[in-house]
Amino acid sequence: MSLPDADCRHGQWLRAIAERRDRAAFAALFLDFAPRLKAWLVRAGARPDLAEDMAQETMLAVWHKAALYDPARATAAAWIFTILRNRHIDQVRGTRARTEADFPPPPVSPAACPAPTQDAVLIAAERAARLHAALRTLPPDQRAALHLAYFEACSHTEMGKALGVPLGTVKSRLRLAMAKLRLALAEDEDEAAP
Amino acid sequence: MIRHHPSEALLLRHAAGRLPPAHATVLDAHLARCGQCRVALGAAEAVGGALLQTLAPAALAPDALANTLARLDAPLDPLPAPGMADRVPDLIGAWPARPWRRIAPGIATLALSPRDATDTRLDMLRVAPGAGLLGHGHAGLETLVVLRGAFEDGVASYAEGDFAEADATLAHRPVALPGGPCICLFATTGHLKPHSLLGRLLRPLLGM
Image (tube, rainbow over all chains, first blue to last red; front, side, top):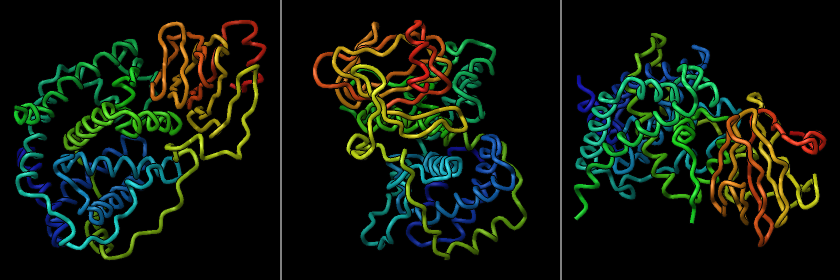
């Protein structure tokens, strides 16, 4: 399956969970994400057994918070990524890291919660598709710098050492990479502008 | 108007949850005041999601899905209260009872969290107009956000909401500008490296 199709399905599954507490949609989302959540945690330095637990906890949080997902603000993968990240930070700090934003939502009645429209899910999936395409066309040195910043458990000053270049070079590669990726993300906003 | 923002590298590491908590707190204080950087953080989170999808999946326990499905209807565990250093929005008002510690004429600090496992600590700094910090370099990352007042460091001036970061490549000597006292929230990894003899003498007092 291609990623854009996946992005569209992820958004629809989240909607099905929010609207109907759809367990089949949750199981499908789980199978796509939980193994990658665990992979991310292991690369971030978590013990495999803890990474396994936290991947499951993160998916439980996705189940409980699905009604808060807003496709106009984020792709499904980005939203799940932030839940994972916040849980990981909490675990590392031994406290709650992010407060209001991360508390379980009060029960929402279906009528009170305007469901994300099919359009919004599609637009988010298209945005994600542009982002994937832009990521694929990044020069290898910029992609390596991104992977380092997101996935490798090293300190700020170690980032340069890890790539064998000065920290300033890593920083400028990240700037160049993010400029391109932001352009890809913002394309639909430009089209919408008069 | 905010003129100084965190680097892309710092925002990305924040989006990835990779910063020591003290630096993350300083960055959050800037983000609370800077819409432009909140948008940039949103983009960085989108990239995080996209990169997550490209990771090779790790093998899960055979019963992982069944386990999780069985827990869907259970109530969530109650959450512990947020830690002290996590409450950024009104940091100044939040600890009226905590004493500022005078470390030099016109200069006081308030320790918010002690040196952690990443050798990073979080402090607030209050500098009277015209008073200056010791000229110093950095062994590790230093981040700072101005909560009130303004200072200049010989290169640029920083006002409320402005963010400054320095690493081992920068040496500077911040001086508070006229007006009210300058109050900053700052995080330091490793020890500051004072250049002057006076700096070396005062370093034990600063405890940095």
